[in-house]
Length: 240
Image 1: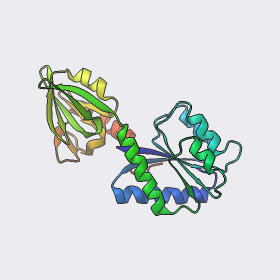
Image 2: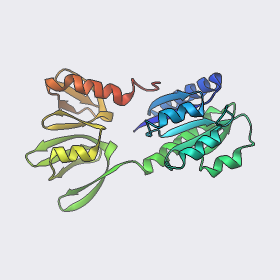
Image 3: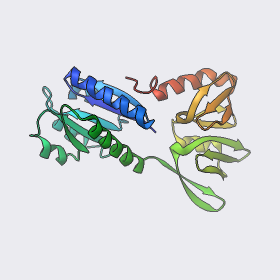
Image 4: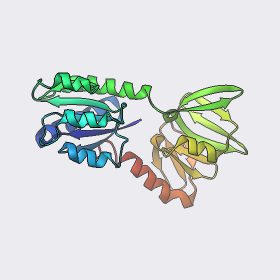
């Protein structure tokens, strides 16, 4: 699961310190993160209006005009899943922070090890609410975590799902399945759907996945798949 993280702090030095810590955490835990930075609450809200898919918000409280607590209250009106972590130089706002269901409250300068523990808790919380797929498999209803699906192969009117937990067959069209899986999956061949998050390398005629699997790539799909791959990973770990 790629984590989209926002860092909102009007102090550039503090912001850079948090970003460095986030990258270190991602490297040590082998996580994929995409970092976006904001110097004001208003700047974050402007982008949030178009992109509501942030997973974690590292939020300073003392900022000009709208402060962090006010921003959090606005976000909680329509988003109860966003993991909000407050950082500040003063403990005075702690009670208000927990009123908006903040994940934690860290005092500056932020202790990296404490930050890492909170980030792990945030990632665990997000895992509990991540997207799942319900499928019929040999007369049984199966619940699959979507990010665990590597790729899908179509045979006539049924599909074979290759997952981290094994192979699952279901009678469903690849078109319908693609709609249910969402934009994290891309059609790379008339007979294959691939999870963008599982791609390791793209060659001219093949796609290589993290588990060592290889999936054929239609030549006419090469550019489309490359562009989708770049967009999905935001340019790589720690991209801003």
